[in-house]
Length: 140
Ligand code: AMP
Image 1: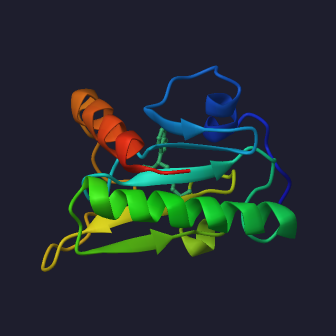
Image 2 (image 1 turned 120 degrees about the vertical axis):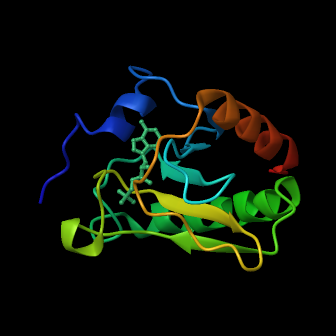
Image 3 (image 1 turned 135 degrees about the vertical axis):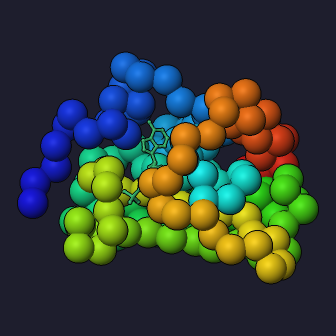
């Protein structure tokens, strides 16, 4: 269970493949999930390399939690959400499909069920618009 530098989020972090970026600083990046489980589904990704929660540095986790809270507050405002689901998967048995630590921030509306995890690709124009909405609502 070692870190694979060719995972897709590592490629995004190196700028080798594009993403619908919401926010970036020295320690983390936030971008839209391409297969959102609800409109506005974003991923908060630390830049430090770890597979998941199990091998992450606790200092990285602490900083990540603070950023997740800021993104969560922004997501509520940006998508007029009634609530939020925050998810994090560890290893294939835990449902993880991309092996670089990340936290899912998913705005929720009362009575609307979550779409499947890693389900259908969203229209890039929708992702772009949602990235802009979320960016405007995050106060760092
Ligand atoms: P998991 O590793 O199970 O926490 O899930 C990985 C998440 O990344 C899924 O929700 C996918 O829809 C999402 N995903 C996969 N590839 C990309 C990509 N290139 N850009 C943005 N999101 C992605």
